[in-house]
Length: 111
Picture 1 (cartoon, rainbow, N blue to C red):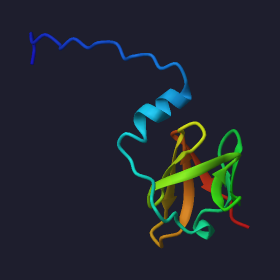
Picture 2 (picture 1 turned 60 degrees about the vertical axis):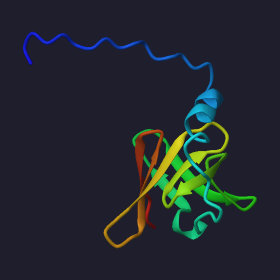
Picture 3 (picture 1 turned 180 degrees about the vertical axis):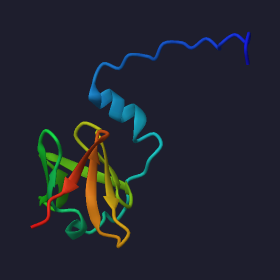
Picture 4 (picture 1 turned 90 degrees about the horizontal axis):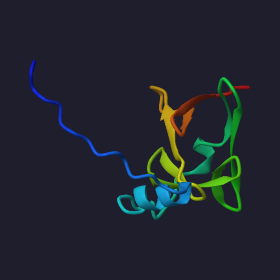
């Protein structure tokens, strides 16, 4: 409404590291799934504007690059190393066709 003062906002607290961000954001309000999803739905190569993303299985864990993922819901995970959020996006047929890493989207490469 015109003339209504805007509420004051305090500045966000600075975080000193990604680990602190991960520890403060994810474990406090998420629970890692007891049974992680089948890797076959996610593994593959994904292409973005700048860099390719490779999703594979290393030592029994689904990884993005060198970062192992911890799923807390179907298609939703975060990097166990640095807390980066990862989302897999499915098409209407239920096939994973995109990955979003830290907010940036990458399309799955088809052969």
